[in-house]
Image (cartoon, rainbow, N blue to C red):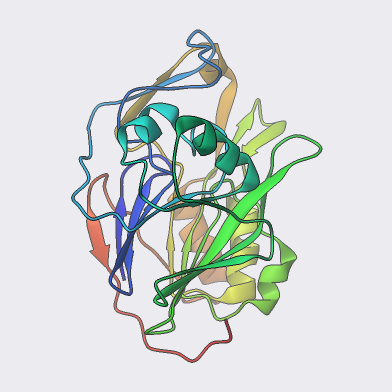
Length: 259
């Protein structure tokens, strides 16, 4: 399994001979509803994608996961899997092979990789977006991704999970309203599934943020704090922190799992 962090929530996952582009933000700036004055993200580096991309995977329909400028640039014939909310976004952009996954549903890519949707981040009172369990059907390794640190208790029944991509540092509005969960929720996840590796996501490696909202966003905890929490709870999970654009090869044992 090879993982390449493309900054923010964007990853390239190479698993079972397949290349999956996850929540890609590769070009342009990031804004919500074009409100540049409120919040704007600017990437100082670009990450051109080498062909082929076998699948685009979107966890949410919000712009920081289903990024319209990037999705407009990518080949619209690439198969795309996303939450129901994300599927609506890409349908309007003209993608031709869209699979909408509700919680509990599974998509299989060429008999090599399975992707199971699980409850993820609550976006408003009536909408919970997706997390994903991605399974290598050849080597039987598993990766779990949830970009805001909201981990459903159903994951207790989904072990083993070898690799986790999720925040380990929280962000809140004035230490009151959580935007990203991190320290406690991800520690609890590690206690449930005991992964070999955790890779933080949603951090700003080479991204600059501006706008009024940035003045009230507060960071909670550090990666070093989280590593200490793992050690204090006798967990052998390793935290890996790749640089933007850096690929990490993970040597994982083959396992037998129920998919």
